Length: 497
Image (cartoon, rainbow, N blue to C red; front, side, top):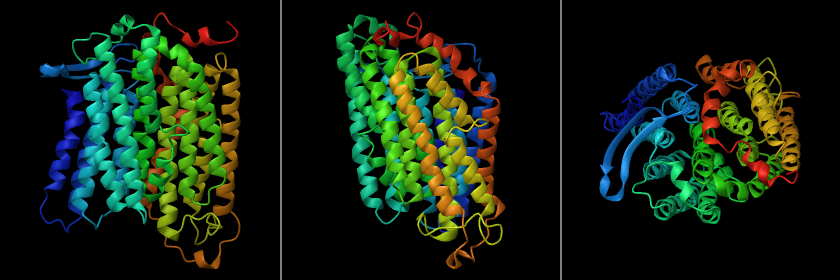
């Protein structure tokens, strides 16, 4: 029952945090949430030690007939595609709770929502029933809406409502695809069973794939369905942005791998060229918009849109190497974006501004933010794909695995990767270099507890960059099974064939 524990311990912990007495004492809900998150993270590590990366099938499976009348089963399982994201969720949830500090406004509700969000995301990554995945996929909307609407910035109401409308539409489209698959494949239940897709011709699969792609494109998000993300990031608090960029966006890319490729393999061949082109457009658009931003949070938000385009390109290519690369890029982006949002949050907390035209000289060793500035430089280097960090190996694998199938789109994404250095160097040069302005000469010091989350993520980014096999070996066996008999499926759509 270890998989159920990863879902229900944080959900039950949310109930405990919400019902604590003396709500004015904000530390008590935080201590409960930290304890629960630490326990879940430890349990996730224990799960990783039990798993066999060479086994391509689902492990630690749990199966229970829940509502047999509609074919809904409580079916859970973990494999090499889902475990790295499950571990990422556990790590970033702990960091988000730790970084929240002492909440003075409705602390019980706040920490309960963070734990509920963690349980819902874990359920989506572990679900092996289509309807169960949909339920967890929708569950995360509720806590995230309130986290933005209550603890967000001045335009939090607008950003939260926009997020709600977009993601609700995303769920509706995903459910439409699942219902159509069960009906047309004559499945007796909603169990995840790719073998049943052989009953569907490629044209029928394509009709079912289209709503799934639209729904997941909103969640990822991919241009032109991206407009909710910058607003959500700008108005959300720092811990919520960490979870939003680091974990929540991966529900969309995970869905592409698990259900897009897994259920509609024949139709994927037909859609792959368009998806690769859309990934390249999204990468260039996100990078171009990031260059024009004056808010540090918006720069990081648009960089996420660009990097999600790389994942779409890799999944579209659907070679064994590109699928492994997509999995690695999901984890890489989760770690790097979480680090960048944490650092931007510290800058905002100490200076009261995220405006790149106002901030200057924060790298000054005296009365500046030298350690935060140094970590920011490390973070942007990782995002730009500098060798020695996890961002480099993930992007290299994406481009190496995709180029034989979609050379033009891959080259365009390479241009987008080059632009990453441009917009982040512009931001770092304006904010951290130069002479510290008099208005910023008396900044409060950054305490070590405020630095620890960023230091931990930085260390992990470097370690996985130097030892990328520790990350990529999880998905290699599962990728081979996913493309069994269809290795390099996109070759059939390549002009060279």
